[in-house]
Length: 135
Image 1: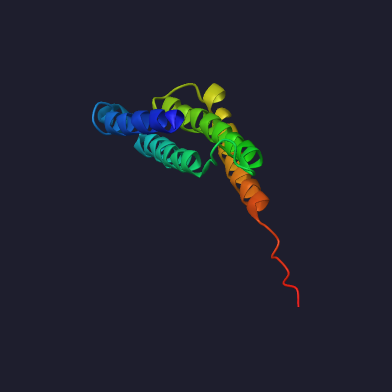
Image 2: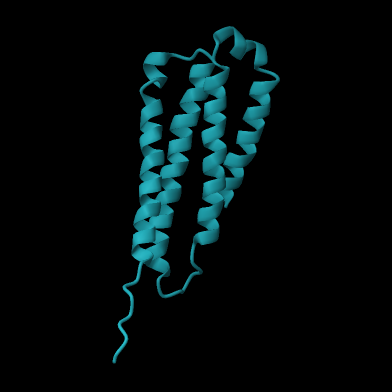
């Protein structure tokens, strides 16, 4: 929940900062949309991390360790993905070096996708075969 709160707090701050304090700078560079995309993905994944925290089974539950494995990896991938994806977009929107930060953006996107893959893996581990009734 700590990561969710941190990403949510900074996402709202960066959204407001871009809309007000950086408005002229982003307009001059024509990068307001890039900034907004970074904020959007950051806030979406902050919310998703909050959902992961709520979904996490209590310690000591029978399926807890198996579930916790995929949820932990989901949180790691999303956190790294937001850092790389949104972070690089923020730098690029402020006219940062494209040669350095341009290649980081897709790595962040891949990390976000990997996190969603972990959600799918987690869901598949929760599927239980239908019990057969004895006649």
